[in-house]
Image 1 (cartoon, rainbow, N blue to C red):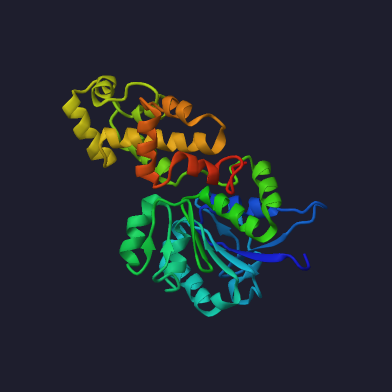
Image 2: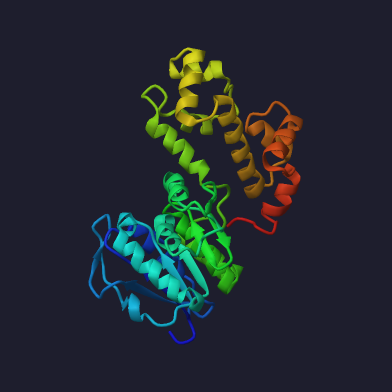
Length: 326
């Protein structure tokens, strides 16, 4: 593996397995036109013994943290075990001493607890799994937690949201190191977006709603997302949920922390954004597809929500734009 970028993955009892194996699979799939791997991947633990993930997977460390040697990048996955004091302190202490010797420090999901304990993230904008964002902000008030992002970069520190977003971040790192062509090849191999549209709120909020809602409304969020062109007024949605308009509006806001109208508008705009980045459909056609009565109303709503016109958004993120999808 001479000349390859050496990436260390900190492992521990109680690790979330996908936080580890997702990014590792992405980096392992990064090969050049001759099939040569671009990275050396090293599992690192506090001690030279097997660790057990939350799901029971047993993982063997290749190196011990104390003498791992030089790393290009250190990746700290999340998991229940990292939030225990001794494990969290071990990686925090290592980062305090060695952070200047690594080019990048990466946290996946709740791996941020370990990095934040070092104080190295103070004053920086970071993200984590939406379910832990408030706790992270409360425990580390000097951090600027942005719970809406899939991943964020602040200097040499890279933080990502929940679980599969570690793959999104890994693809960005591969593109940074090896170029778009190799990153695109990895994305195709893994059958994922090279750059996923939207933020984690599009996943966290509907899922939270479906889990917390009563039986009468449990499937409503998914139904709304699949029927954006239909009448989605409070009256129509209340009838579908078998509730009065007032009961439905009150229940929806209590569970979802927004009015039904605000949710419908957000869902329509997120779908429109995907259409703009992934298709060549006309803006007026997209407006009708996602339920707007006119393209003018759609343009005004899009501009207000994203602070950019639909045309400008497509020019940047569309198929031919700078940040085109797979």
